[in-house]
Length: 285
Image (tube, rainbow, N blue to C red; front, top):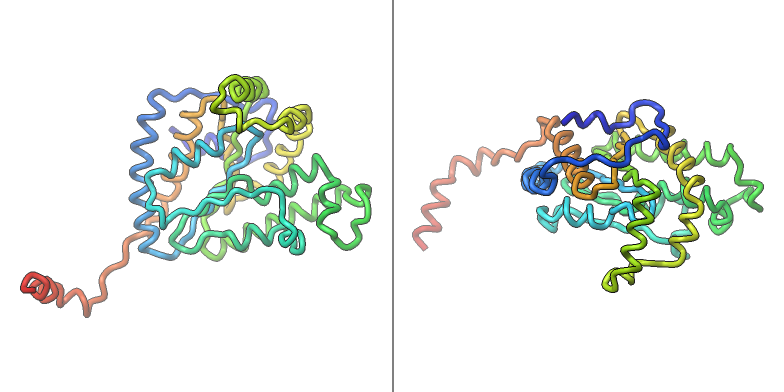
């Protein structure tokens, strides 16, 4: 499988983009990659020079939660931290829009997973520009002030943020789970029809669904303006969940394997020359 097929290296049009691919034995293949990815994460942790940031975006029901569960279940719990970003808190609104994401970045040696990301600030807020007023920004007094120049600045700020963290050792993966409108309808109906899934449903899901076309336009522009070599977007067909999970895991693993400097550190020579003595000491207790 050529993972570059899913990388956004030129402008994409979402209405022409693939939303479904079915990979044979996707669940079985995921288990294999997941195991290798878990071992690689142990090495990354011991190496301690890179962090990995995995950003997941997609429409409601795109499968972000289950993807996180299935892709990262083989990880040592100390090596991965998941952040689910909701509506900004009062404290978060007192800072710039990237602040809460910056302080959640993974430390070197760890994976950080953002379930919804800093891109909500050019997606949800763009569909609902009135939300920007809650940020209490200088020179933003009404929705009319949230113009094209405002969004261009925000895209530039996101690009600068990602460039900065990438230059300081964070490897960035951004995945757009590309769901079809029909599949979203089917998944929402399953939430309504299965009692054990009712808790996942919110009437707000239907309100946002009516804005589908606006969201697609905003996603398309955000992806096209921020897919960079140091922080690429991958458009993942999301209608088939097992295949989407496998693709994400495979892309992360195959990319990280290209960093041949990620190796477990060698023992200090002063310790290495005394290994047999240490063994003998322990065995003679």
